[in-house]
Length: 166
Image (cartoon, rainbow, N blue to C red; front, side, top):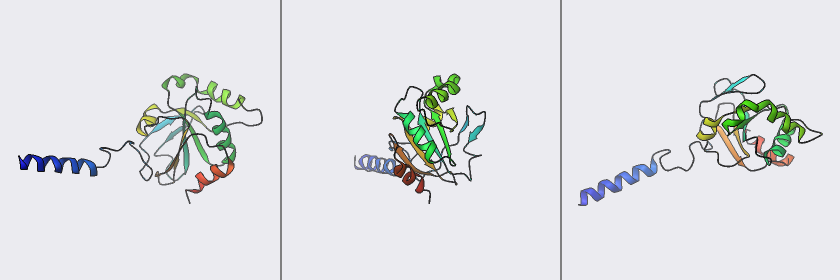
């Protein structure tokens, strides 16, 4: 009986310290971005491999997320020289990426979002995205630096988020 209790205790202890076994997220800050390949509405292919050497933001959204649009405008305009990718969590957005992009641009008269739009259901599942907008900051080595849940609208907030790369 003592041997069974000891083995059970040992098993529980191993599970607690095994990476990913009891975590509530698959990919956390400080881990490498999972392997991905996305084709965006600009016709370009973006992948974890071809983005090595470039810092970027993955913005998880969906066409039905009206609260995401202001964040898209704010981040795209504030970080206009930085790579910013909009990634839909909804597979039904795939055939209408260009329309969605136009709707986002039409949602604010004096602003346009130049970021490429793509669909990445598997990528959103790997990050266990449950809320939109969710923005994930990736460094040049492909490491997840930071995750921001919810709107990101203020210049100072956006600059602070991006500055975590330094």
